[in-house]
Image (cartoon, rainbow, N blue to C red):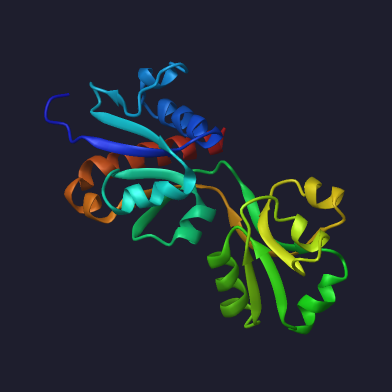
Length: 220
């Protein structure tokens, strides 16, 4: 494939990377080097297709894409919203679906509905700030946590939490429940703004191939 435009793709470490490579493979974009689980390489390459891949922690993926270290990236929409980087969000990949929710003990519902001042524990202060300040017009004190935010209401640190909910089983086991939905989440493809101009044809080709694959699978 001489003359083909080279692309670099940043993938989120873990299950998201695996699901992304499976989808890319079904759309005709592969990387045999990534199949070696014992490899210590940091950059994986498909020389024929002129594609480079690297793995990064979720919050770092939009940073790599914004600054042009990667042309494309795949990351959860929670990270896209929280990091708020200058990138284009171009495609919902349809997997990794979950919800961002306000949760807490049953008695917190009255506090929430009254519009009272709340203490909110979260790993996602930007998403929480936008939700409470702009959508609910409610004043809150945000407390950033990095671990199990469910502890917040249990030990009296906060009234409620804002966090990702998949099945809700962890909340239930700890006497908490979903009080409000903030937004739906899933894996998204993002693009560097300059690359979208300089490498438009190749990037549109990749996006188009993935979109066609997703539509075909949706019709099955």
